[in-house]
Image 1 (cartoon, rainbow, N blue to C red):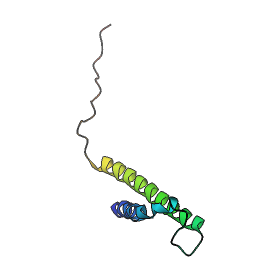
Image 2 (cartoon, rainbow, N blue to C red; image 1 turned 135 degrees about the vertical axis):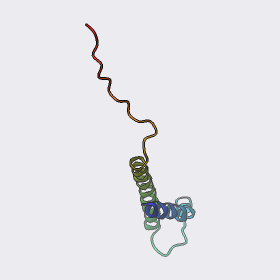
Image 3 (cartoon, one colour; image 1 turned 90 degrees about the vertical axis):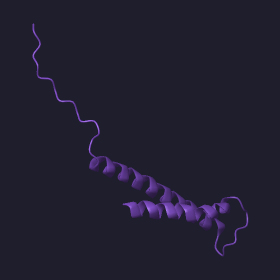
Amino acid sequence: MLGVCAGAGLSVVFVLPDLTVFHFAVLPVAGPPALERFLVALVLGAGLATAVAGAGALRVLAGRAAPSAHPAPSPDFTESES
């Protein structure tokens, strides 16, 4: 799970320099500019979504594994007087 988070984080970090494709009219690519912009948005979105999902899963797994610092109070079985 940690590997998934790390991979997602790296994909986001490595695609950040490519965000300039949204600022320039002429791109240094051989293909159509719309395809390059779509691919950058796709990789950025997929990387962010995977990182958020992996972090949430790690948080849930850590919560299950860690013992509770505050034990649940035991119910009080004393009967009240009428």
